[in-house]
Image (cartoon, rainbow, N blue to C red; front, side, top):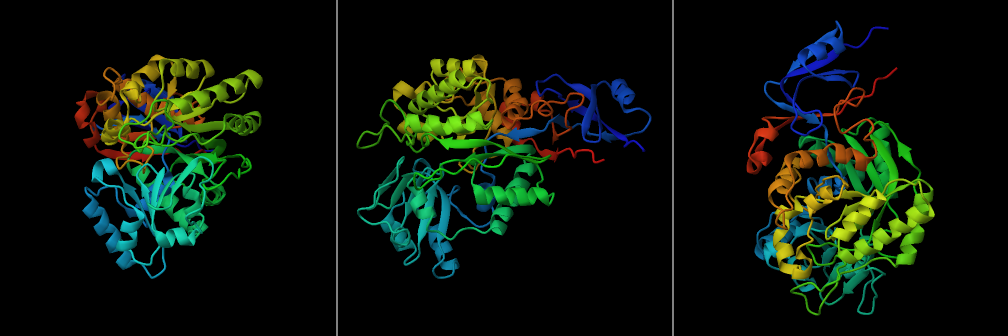
Length: 515
């Protein structure tokens, strides 16, 4: 059997650990790293049969991972959903909604996302949406996806009236047409169910765009049965352009029903061996569960805690003992108290289980960080929030908690494995290099900026740890997958404010050798 020729990459800095320590050459064969080092070492590993690939001064990094991005929602906003995120005012939002109303066939739902009161200066309500789209059901989701505005036809379609109660973990304001947290499911359940073909199209649109940003792997952090089926169909057809890790949702919004544990799945491009719980809301919209009331809200509000602790433990235990990893959304300090207590109990009563994650980890105290370290928890924060959502934090956060906002350096200092992510499309900016820039220079708390090596490590090795495959991905070591991100220029010799402007010249996802 003829051996596949090796490829030697050279002609630009290669950072095998994404830490600023450069090598001159990388030898790859059949999708796996042979060696990384000098030109002579690469030639020796490649043997007589090899090709060369001149980088022309570009930089090679281990493939970048976004450890928390809602893939299909990214694709939906790039194709069919009304995108309000760039609107600068209430007038712009109104114009976009009015224009979409004119475009849609009669009776179709008008669904949009991206309003943000700190950016646009208003919160849409039922009366406004009734006027902008007369007779048409309208659902506008806030940028954080935790608060939603609907109009009268939408409420009627969902069977919501003056006396309708919100489900546990949610809030419903009938007069304003506002739904918070789990109450969203009351309206979503009344909307036309997307077909599998639609889900597949949204997934592909999202993944194609994310790959163009230099990402070779992502975690989609809230997948239900129809979406899971769409991912499996795409994987079976060989159509997934990058690697995807799924967090399967156990408790969908809108009620108290719990989805059964999914069937585990592992292939070259797709894995599902994790489940997802939402413990609280979002920090930028003042729905995360906090211990001190938010500013600017009347009456005083401590956010929303979705679960009773005993119920959360039982659901988490069921997953834990069957070997499922848990990725739990917990932002506020009250939610972190609850989640870490559950993880500690799992560790005490059922030791030796998989490592679990905390999605966002928005307001941790020093005690939270130490407890997370002791439990082997993986932290999955979003540094880009520090850039895009800063005005929201200024608006809502009480001084008692402002010193705990995404303390990235403290996460590393506590010894946590940290995986960076975007949480797109909560934010407009999904470029990993913009996330790196925010992490190294835009800390909300003075002194909490991180180093370039830490930031890139959190997008490479840290992402692989969170994904579950750090034994073969996340750095460029012999035998590891040759997933590569190619960047124009050298990010380790670029001023931080210029990092987002470095062009991405490719993302290579290694194919497994077929026998």
